[in-house]
Length: 101
Length: 419
Image (cartoon, one colour):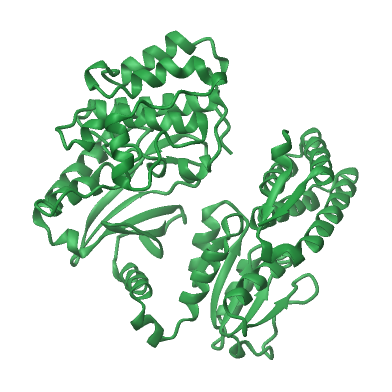
């Protein structure tokens, strides 16, 4: 991913919601890792579905994209794909840059 | 206004509340977390709410079941159903279960949410004073009135200059469909109607996988309708956003578009209105063309003598701008403009006015592709030649060119995953 892919623009009036949003994403990442370790595909599917729904709404399109990958991977039971997507999610959350406009 | 917001996702509750309060500062929004609470009991005061916003996947429950249960109550207000599922069958089921409107979470914007809530909560007085609301209300009522054997018309999902568009479902299996009902002003124009029926009868006979399947058309009382397949994958405009596509994916789609044009040109049909919104994707990623210049034909017939009316000019061929007689090369030009946009993520020409953009098609040399895309420049050049005599003559020529110049590209031979 290029530097631009880590840059997200969020509406100014949503700025105060972002700390909660990001905190929930980090909790989500932990939950994903736990669910993958336990091979809990139903939980992974639910978490992926949630990411898919919430990411775009806040302007984090990549969260939605990864959510879809995780939801699809959980449906097919593809642990390798899930591992890759969750790893990418962790990388993304550690590098994402947020600007408010 | 008082709204009950049922969603297991704290972030969605926060966002929806913020959008609503941004528009209605005095709105009272009660969050309801289904992870912590069961379905509202009979004692729960639903009547005190003007609207329920209800999520589909509730974490530990099915929003559709909640919807059905809530709607069985006499005191249930209007319900806006939110779904994170891309599958439109959920929307069909939600509307059948009593939802008054639905929104996909992935596409939820402030504007869409406010428009939906405004419509669902508007008083009759407000409806009569707002032409936009009145039009949508009329559209909703119209959809409910039209009877099509075997098909249930569910919900207004769009309006254009010639038709209102409804989500519908086949009664036997809930398969989502689209029903278009022509506007009365079009129906009353006999010449326009004859052309419409004639052209769609032709499209029905094409039987190409690259063309939207028309499943029927007919008349109920004074309403003319069309039934066509529903496209879950959305349109090219939505897929593009403002970003370039990987070149091989763009070429793959472009090649499919050429097959589509080949199929319709063979039947003597020109599309004349190719644009991203008219290229739709099915669930399996295949592409199909919709809206066969109907609007353009009808508009032209309807407005004779009233001066030239330009639609979106971004994809018009020079001969279209000049109002000359058209042949299939006009579609080849428009497809070239589309390919430029797919490759670069930018419009070929921009301008302050529609006329300015149109004149660029007539007079301005197209911008060159960026260096990394230079190998596609000869293709673009020959597609968007201003002199149509110098352009590719037909889709087959383009397909041959693609095969000769790019056939070594493995991606051209594989199916692109469009999801």
